[in-house]
Length: 354
Ligand SMILES: Cc1ncc(COP(=O)(O)O)c(C=O)c1O
Image 1 (cartoon, rainbow, N blue to C red):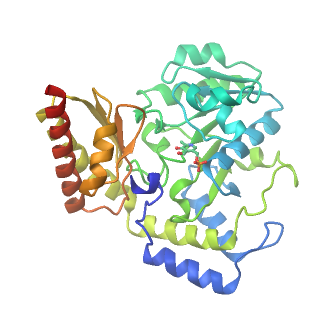
Image 2: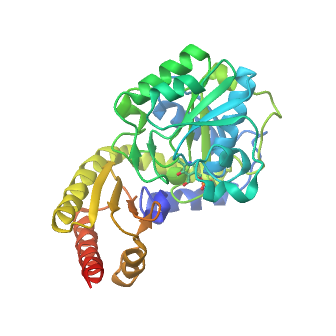
Image 3: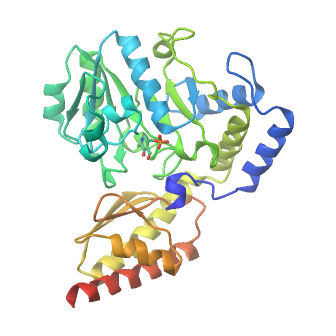
């Protein structure tokens, strides 16, 4: 489970702990209307690491907030109202983010949601072309859908989304909250597809476990936001920024994106072996250390039995296991987890036959 994808650099990474302690001794809070060194350092680091041109950053405290900011930036910059999101997409549970989230299970009790959100089928270029118009402020996409079940954008889809946005004047927002920071074997999942968004949302592992999120945008896009248009008291908190600086340094210095690619390949091979042995496994898919393991049956028993055997597993819907382990995971740990999973699947298979 990897802390729901947060523990990229492991739990209580010593470099992150050290940065938190040091910063706490200097100053713990500093509102973003004032200058702060840790924050300035993080702004620079993110601008260097981000896809080309995304040099401006707005800080907040959670993934959903990063999405809220992206929606407001898009509306303000384009002076348009419509946001187009994807079927199967997940962007968080605050009202704006929820309006872009597909699953009716999360939405139903809270209707009406924010007006002028539309959905288009993930992977379908034609449908998107029909949905996006000169009223569209932005199209929001996860390059690889996480909550939806670890679904990769089909080859060629994201470049076409970019083209449709360019032609209609809509902004392209990539939600890299789950896919970003090396998880998929590249710093950003967008790199696999050669597409650069106008706005990007980052959160989860950014602070090494401390809550912090960032919305990045091109200079002229962010410039549409005037002082006071959007703010949050804790955004850019110095301790969170110091933790994020240490986390980013660790990801870069330890080459964790490369490691995620290598370990992900190793992990997927192990999972493919399990699939070959057990017909109740339908598919193994993913990139780097973002892996889906789809079963033909409900995985509840596997989740629950896993707890007793030493693995905390994560689901993605009724029948999909989702692996988001720390990028520092070792081959031994992967082998151990895969061995436990093999036994869990075998037991489940046996109980299904009885
Ligand atoms: C792609 C994506 N966007 C947004 C969010 C929401 O983030 P948070 O739970 O920090 O609000 C998540 C959380 O799982 C996510 O995976």
